[in-house]
Image 1 (tube, rainbow, N blue to C red):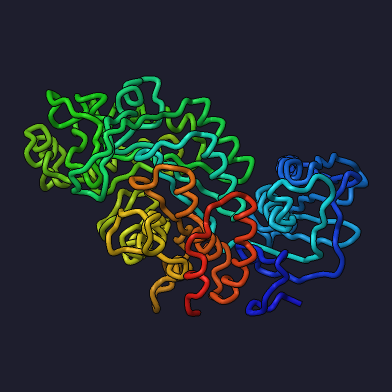
Image 2: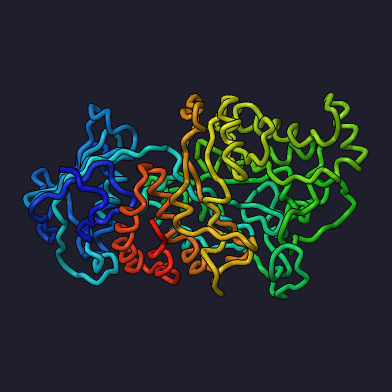
Length: 523
């Protein structure tokens, strides 16, 4: 029988996200020094990942054997499991993890990881462990299950990004969008333009308080990645079934690039610093051919490093005042047959998107109003779901990123650990869980254009890994649940989350400060 969702599951079966079908079975399987894996051709990556988790958790690294009792099987005939679905059977005599595609096995490995005793996750067991008997069939509802981490405002070391990826994979999220560039910092190495990181990767200080504050911390902030570090991150993520999507934002949010190369701006004679403020900067890119060529080169190097089929090119929060007062921009708009310089925003994005398309990739843009984005762009809608549905009706693939549901830099509630990014805004666990990816009533047509959803964590007020994880968890657990298995059952989720919190604690995630208030929220 299926596990009845409102009932309290055995703590060891408190899985997040909830599997599509889960039936407890009698018996337990013991993983010990005698356990061997039987690995089908094509399942080697999943076997390596499983060994990588078991070694620090249990001291075990089970080897391959033809008579192994822990079986990882690939069967393309299991078409109902799709690209990422899996089946898992744990019985006293053995374990069978099966999938139609390698990505499904990677998702199943994360379920096995969640079935490990909490002590093993914390690395406090040195020998064998037991897995509870269970039968699971599990297929995700959406293929884009993402999280954005802003490393431009506050740089994070690459070893922390590895941990961040591993926590995403634990929750069966499959996209990490890296926000690599912004007004306050440029973190992406570009060999053709080294000043982007040498100059653009450093700012003199940071604003204290929300946009408009007149207080600064007086501390320099700097950091950028090497190509080797980013290539290593991409490989580490791929081994866990996570795609790293780079974001190089244009034509706004570019003050750090203008500080490095003033000729990119509308006033090339002006020397700007890397912005030390928060908010929306008035400086935008110029619209000369040399600017387009510059960013084509930047994107070429970015796409060479990130094999993701998607490349995010930004496109939001672009003030047009500089263009409206620039003779060069006014002349450019006239040459292109545009109604006025304001329309250079869409023109610039079209040319950037075309370059990404010609490279065989899919451009992604932020949608902040109902205007039509460039053709063939995937739309990430952050202001309101209505913009997402408008884009879907025009034929765009869409990713829901509604700030009122999935901006994890919003405060979890009142308290000294909460960021001041949006005074008056807070985002509790129940609100994230309420994310709805269904189209408006009476308009089912666009539903097939929804790729999924993505949470965002902007880091103006989030400088450290501990603060990142405090704000991310457990709210990201709710998003992971909604994009994997969207059936509404808040009571069941809240019950399973009690057990899952122990996993987070074992993994050292600082998530518990508001536990009592969240747990007592009315169903």
